[in-house]
Picture 1 (cartoon, rainbow, N blue to C red):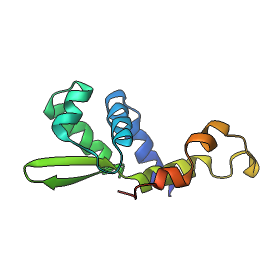
Picture 2: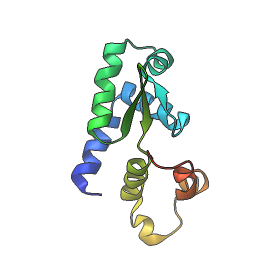
Picture 3: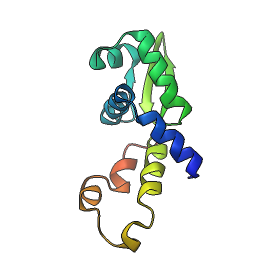
Length: 116
């Protein structure tokens, strides 16, 4: 991952509503959620959701697919994995200094269910 890509992803996540949307989509897994369900869960109007989703999509953190008349959004787990790897690359000179990350965010767990 290039530093410019990491900066764009981090900038997209550096806003409370977008971070809430992203975390909700991470929890939803590869199937994602439709726009109406996201707006309801977060408690924002559809137009506001559209604005924030566009920012996350430009950063490559979410993808969309249309099913019938609904648009479903899901996390781009590969991009999330790349960002985490970028942030922790060469951490503590290769030591095991991130016990919480290693315990709950293994590559195998992040990639379970496929990348979006």
